[in-house]
Image (tube, rainbow, N blue to C red; front, side, top):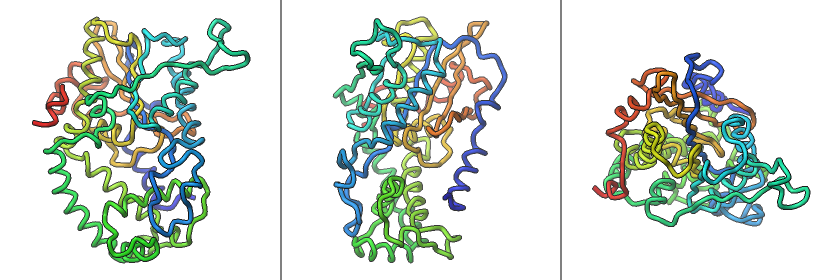
Length: 378
């Protein structure tokens, strides 16, 4: 059951974005290209998060960090959403029409497979390769290049200037949070078995307890203990706030967003430019990225459309390119952060017209764009 904290989060998101149903009625014209970035589905924790955890790797059938059945279903349902939304635009799978690029992480690769199962079911006998089987193998790509890693899992790619920025700012943020919640930190140091060495990043990492809760694994009572001095927030809610602050603080300035989201944004907009100009691109209709929460967070901040909330599993940022009757190209940006329903939110770029013209967006984001991996080292 949602606490007041989660009700606030949901209300904040609702106020920040405009539901697609209430979006502008301006005629957009003809859809000519789609690009989308999604976060992988629900996964197991990366490892045992604290010594006294009642659960261990045996609680996760596929092992640490791997996608769960829930996660696979989330991406399958996202694929069904794509199938419904783009029915008539893209039908049967054709490698000339669509390309899927995934990070090298297992969870991103499996997520791509699950989404493709929903997007391209076998629906005619010519495509059916096995009797009564509706699944068909669909190719995806995971390049082992340095650029691919910088695009889709940028936190693993070194950038000296960014690393120094985050180190300096995080020290202040960590000190503030650890002092504000000193009683909770001291309490958790004891009950988790981590001891006095419990640091800010470890507090944020305890967020993986949420994975256990969602999968109905046993939890000690302290996880749900309420703290009157913090508006009756539960321990898990306070841990969630540590995680939120930790994640958002990595991308919440234009310079940080540039170093971690500028390369991907440049990749996306450059492709849109080529499509708009009639220049051939590697896929004629759709380019999809299977990635991580940090990928979406950094891209949102690069576009200046972040809601400063955590990115849930299977969340998807979609960018659609339309051609108007007067031959202008405009962009619609959508954010889907719930797989349980069909809700999708339209995001509006600050200082860009509504609808947002591609040329205008390119001008607005020019200071953020990175063109090469080498730019990360300057």
